[in-house]
Image (cartoon, rainbow, N blue to C red; front, side):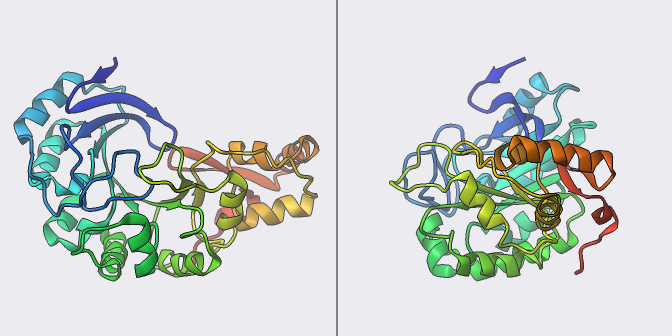
Length: 314
């Protein structure tokens, strides 16, 4: 089954979220409260509300044609920001009534959480992915180019509040832009905020599609170095490998364990970071039960076995 029309698209096999059937809540035009430098869509003026909308019943009728047991998640997205859809709460409730075991997911830039109606509507979803590229106001404005009504400090507080009461799987995504939010100072500020957020996983990414504006991403090596600046208790995952350059470095057994203690790695990370000899010794550490694989949502990470019982300190 492969669907591509004005509302429903996919299914797409997402490494992070599984088999995803998408719902585009702004299929005819870009409608967004951000005009991000890195957006793959053409630049456009920001808006605070949708001017072109589709009816809930039309979406549900299309969804019912393509929903089956092979779909892991129904993903609410848009050419722009899906939370600007004016009937979002009604739509979520209608989807929940027909989805059976399939989970629901929204990909949002977080800004609409300051609206109590949107905040409460998102609580009804199984999975929520919130973007948080920067917490310093001047850097946030440079990268995300938000609508003038948006205050990043208010957004951050609502993200924290949402994470503390939300019962589903919460993902935070940070997209790094070279020369803007990739400084030690901004990462330190992000780290302080993330320690207050109860997230299932924090995805670090960078530009991997042609951007709307002339900006650059960072390399996989730089992403890994940035990941090491975050507190080791945070569930960090490096999501972007488009610009990956193999490091293939030698790590001693102690180096392996120390690295995995600070930042659990996936098999893909290991292939990029470790040379062949180090990868063989990693396998030996697994056989000795010093290293284990831990599943975190749809991904598997290598971690020191003694960390399996470790709980994050709040």
